[in-house]
Image (cartoon, rainbow, N blue to C red; front, side, top):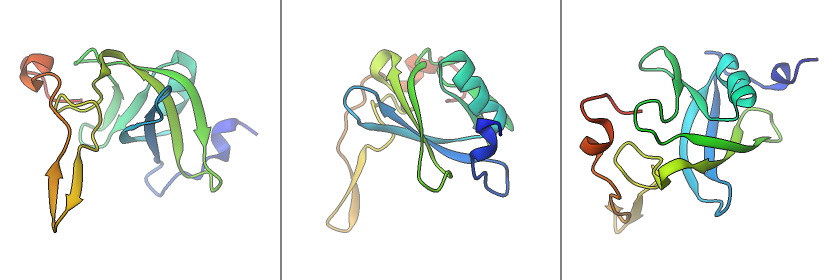
Length: 131
């Protein structure tokens, strides 16, 4: 059996992929992968996702330069979520210019922003749509 056949893909042929910093363990982002994206991620040693909005493969960092170098790929017990242990080039995973996409904390009935912008998104993308 092919290792990709062991994945429990959802009805759209996708699996959620969580990117974590390989050293700190910090959750950086979550995105989706189809079979091709997961296979290419393993082959190329870098995070490649499936963009549902664009309907195409999305090589993380293709526009921003913030590539995610793959150190380890893990599959959960139900085989329906993968974790990518990555080195986040540039230290920024989020299109808002923050280290992590999870920069808001629920406090007192509202979402509070608790992480600083490390780099202005306009400077990162210079007219491109975010990745």
